[in-house]
Amino acid sequence: MSERPLILWVRRDLRLGDQPMLAAAVASGRPLLPVFVLDPETEALGAAAKWRLGLAVAAFARALEGIGLRLVLRRGQALAVLQALVAETGAGGVWWSRLYDPESVARDTEVKAALKAGGVEARSFAGHLLHEPWEVETGQGGFYRVFTPYWRAVRGRVVSAPAVAPSRAVAPAVWPASERLEDWRLGAAMNRGAAVVARYQAVGEAAARAKLAAFLDGPVEDYAAARDLPGVAGTSRLSENLTYGEIGIREVWHAGLRARDEGRAGAESFLRELAWREFAYHLMHHSPQITRTNWKPEWDAFPWRGDNPEAERWRQGMTGEPFVDAAMREMYVTGTMHNRARMIAGSYLTKHLLTDWRVGLQWFADCLTDWDPAANAMGWQWVAGSGPDAAPYFRVFNPAGQAEKFDAKGDYRRRFIAEMSRNPGSEALAFFEAVPRSWGLEPTQAYPAPVIELADGRARALAAYGSRKT
Image (cartoon, rainbow, N blue to C red; front, side):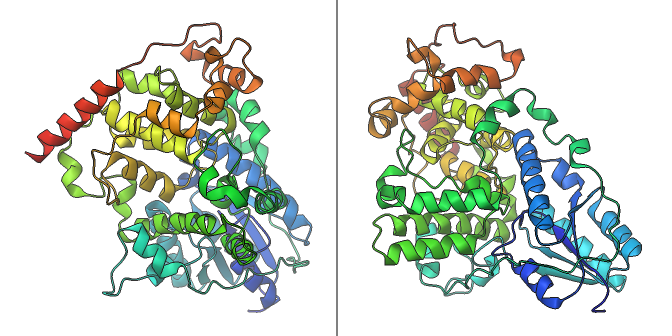
């Protein structure tokens, strides 16, 4: 068995360091055959996420070459592809790092059962999270439904040190055929937007590590306050790298701990936000319906609207509410959106426009390069009121009030809304280069009037909430 190759099925673990599966595989001394499978679950990714994944796969393929390996690319149903590779190579096992969304769990469960039934070693590893979702329990043995007690439970937990990146690995005697990444055209749906968004991507492990170092060298000091200011470069911007596993969460956590121990004022807040990501996965594991139905079943009767013309104005960044529109335009230009802006844009859609949170969830899944199944679902349900949040539904964010508080000088709004400036900057103009031509948007057009008066939208949302209760 020790001489038979080991297939490493890579997914969202596209790095060499802090990679438990890879470290164990290299330590085994067996020939290693990394493979990336473009299966239906991966094909179903949104336009921006699939394009960005392609960049991550290409970078990881280059990194593997540095330790003497190749990344084999195959397209098809995961089980069929893996079984074919076992037959081709005589591999004695298939290993992978775990994923936790319902679709991946169903796929991986089927793959593991079928491989084992065929006499092939099938083994899954931790690596995407600090703590496996089933490892953290309440005193009663259940799962946490509120973040603060979850944070108290994990804040002092021991997190193993990140595994060191291997310098060399054993390659198989013969490499199986591989498809070509460019033939998959993973960025096709991005159309002209790819050229704009590409300017803002930090792809691969080295870029992610540099980004973390730069953050901990300065911005972390003011993170507790600056993280809420979209016009300030006050966050780590690691979300894109974490979602594709271009940097390990253990590496980030331990770096945050060192910053805290060195007295960096914002490090504790940074660690708390890493735990918020963990909490999203904790919830998705224990209540997988969070990705598609109301987390609180009593919200099934709420009269949200389906897709509608006002939601289309929201998608276009043309609601007439500058903070909301700046948020949407930031997404089209950079591929991501500031967290505070996500809350404002989400609240506006679900409350002022009374639109079903799933409309927004799907749009973000299509447009975010840092799309994460757990964070996206929890974030939308949190802001809509149907999810795991102790705050009442009638917390309706006022975009104008939020702008006064978190973008007092208007830097963020001017950065992305060309119509607010006599001489708009390149990023504001890039919005018109990135969006679909079918929208017919031009920087010379007038900024639109508000879709709805904020007071009227709030009143309508509260009336709908009241009617649901009676």
